[in-house]
Image 1 (cartoon, rainbow, N blue to C red):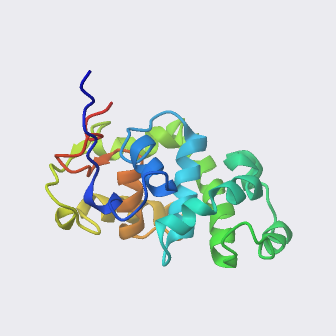
Image 2 (image 1 turned 180 degrees about the horizontal axis):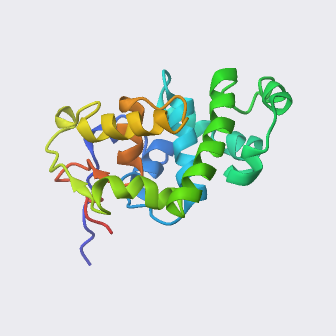
Length: 194
């Protein structure tokens, strides 16, 4: 029996196969995520918390963030108060950045408003590409931009709707994560898995 060799995107090579980053690449990154507003909010929050840090740090703090933010239940997070936010600043299991904590609560409220207008946050975020995946045909990691016109447009619209900590670079990373943009390298075993 011949086993197929698994190849991954070049950026994953610096991590051990059992590492959170490798698992994230293999199981989540770039898979089209539709219809699950809770998970879309979770990944959006991880992007907010990794801003200025690394994605690896954000993933390591993911279990703590899940607990702190009620398993990313949008309604519960939207009802959190400034007092709740202040208490989270002392929680060693999360990234204790007060502005990012407040941004997460704020973003839950913004998502609720978007849900009212578009029936779901998923409908809102996917409407920017008419529900289509953008496949960038990446050869090497150096081909991947930090942002593009789409992420700039979405970041501008999200800012107008009251979202915080979501500039075009963070939004581009988010679009990769939720599979709107497929930036798996052409040789990656996970490029066309779905």
